[in-house]
Amino acid sequence: MKRPLYTFAPLLLAAGLAAPAAEAPAPRSRPPAVVSPELQADGHVAFRLQAPKASEVVLNGQWPDGRAPMAKDASGVWSVTVGPVEPGVWEYNFQVDGLSMIDPGNPAIKPMRAPRTSILHLPGNPPLIHDFQDVPHGVVRQHTYRSKSLGRLRELAVYTPPSYDQQRDTRFPALYLQHGSGDNQATWVVHGKAHWILDNLIAQGRARPMVVVMMDGHAAIGGGPAGFQDNTAAFQRDLLEDVMPFVEASYRVKADAASRGIVGLSMGGGQSLTIGLNHLERFAWVGGFSASAPSKDAVAAALEDPAATNQKLKLLWIGCGKNDFLLQRNQAFVALLADNNIRHEWQLTDGAHSWPVWRKYLAELAPKLFR
Image (tube, rainbow, N blue to C red; front, side, top):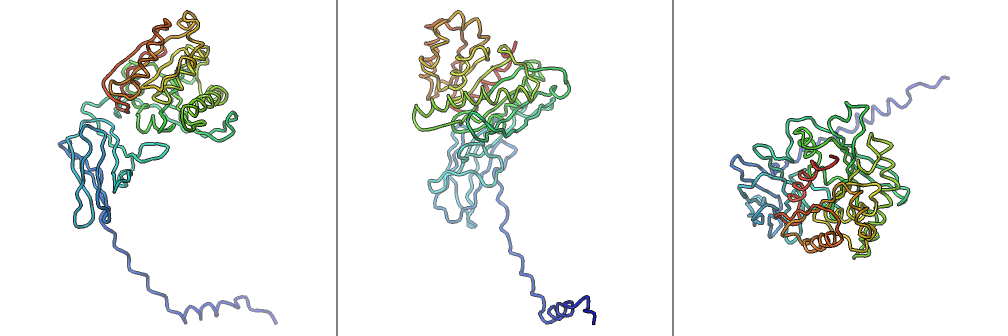
């Protein structure tokens, strides 16, 4: 006798008939979305946080008088309205019972090694140099690469100017632009707005089109001065042995010292000054913003022969704010350069150790590069 083709169908059907379908659970009601930050027409900004069990919440903003206690309503939402806040790109966070945290209502987060800061971007009218403007825009590409010198995967970002994809026969100068110790390879774009600064300067004819390479500066970071020295040495190996060959094989960049610059802020400023002044055969444009300036021994090669150093350098640019905790260190380094007759430009400006200062420095320095 042939076996039936659908032996189990009646059983399945019977099972279905025997057990009535369970009713779907009623949808759970969601609390209304908390809007934060909320920009108001008069320049005031409202901040809110849902934290019904918190006993104290404080807003910490980077703008002047940015610290403000928040008040809780009956639904457990803490809020405060501040301002008017001046146009700019500002950092802020919430301090909840002593714990600093990002604003969960705001997807704009500053890239950091330990993210704890949200971004408030208030465009100017007219737009500021770091604001998005109606001009041709470049492209930022993200890369993961294997660093043979460090033995692990690393990441970097590369900005190409608006004309890069149209001028296929053109090679461009390259700027290696570094972040500080708390940040990473994404911070100069996401928070520093380096790509928009370059777009706007190029559109105004103030800066030459250039490729900008932004690496992860944390190559082998450790604790104390020795850790920073080890990190700079590891970063130098990665830069010279892995990143520069990768960039010069993947992008149309010029490969001579007169077409390369290395600039950074804070930790990245120390890296840039140290590596640049020790490798003038590779970099003719060197700069530091609020730099963790190197010691005399770290740049001894450049100091020993001032004539040769000045001949190779196109520009050595150093800037620091009057309220920066690294001011004395920068002043001592500038005095060291002067005592050894090394040509340089020194900018002492208003401001502290902060991104509003460093955006201005990039906007000031970029027009001087590769001229």
